[in-house]
Image (tube, rainbow, N blue to C red):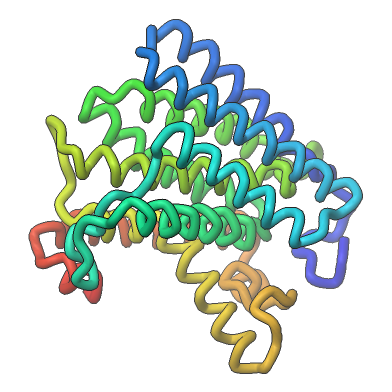
Length: 296
C-alpha cells in the first residue's frame, strides 16, 4: 500500500482479469444463443476487441506501471474503434444547452471526449472496497432495464453480462480474507463499457422505440453523476491549489468519508444510495424543459 491507499495490507490487484473473463464468456455465449443479426454481431466483435485491448493495457499498468500518455492513446484508439466500426456515437443533445442534432464530425469528436471522460472518471472513483463495482452495477442496471423495455437484445446482453460479472467480483472485493481489487485491468474496461452503454443508450433513445426517456442526456448525466461530479470537484480543487488536475491527493469524496471514520462498506452504500436518488430525481423531473431539469 502507498501513502494514499485506503487499505493496509498487500492485496491482489488483478481482479479485473476475473471480471473480464466472466463478462466476455457471458457476452459471447449468450450472444451466439440469442441469434444477433449481422449489424449487432459486428458491434459485439468490435466491442470484444476494444475491451481485450483495454484489459491488457490495464494489466501492464497494474504490474509494471504504464505511462499516462500511452494509457491515453490506448483509450483514444479503442474509443475510435467502436465509433468508426460500429457507428456508436452521440447524434443529438436534444436541446441541452441549446444544442440539438450534431454534425457528423462534431458527433465523432464529442463522443471521443465522452468516452475518455467517463473511462478516467470511473478509474478515479475506484478507491475503496466495492465503490467502483457498485456504481458500475447501478449504471448498467439502468441501461439494462431501458434495453429490456425496448426489446433491444444487444444492449441488454452487454448490461446484464456486466452485472453478473460485477456481482461475482464484489463477493471477493468485500471479503476480509480473500480480498481482490479490480485494479486498472478492471477499471479501464468497465469505465469504457459504461461510456459505451451510455452513448448507445442516447443513440437508441434518439431513434425512438416502444419506450423512450424524455431529456435523455440529463438522465445519462444522472446515471453517471457520481464519477463525473467527483472528478470535476477534485480537478477544480487541484486547479485552485495551482497543481496539475492529474496529480494525486486524498480529496475524492470516498477519501473524505473514510477519513471521517466510515468503513469502506458504509461509504460505498451511502454513495450508491445518493446515486440511485439522483437517478430517481431525474426520472421524476423528466417532463420539465431539459435545461431546467439539468439545473434542478
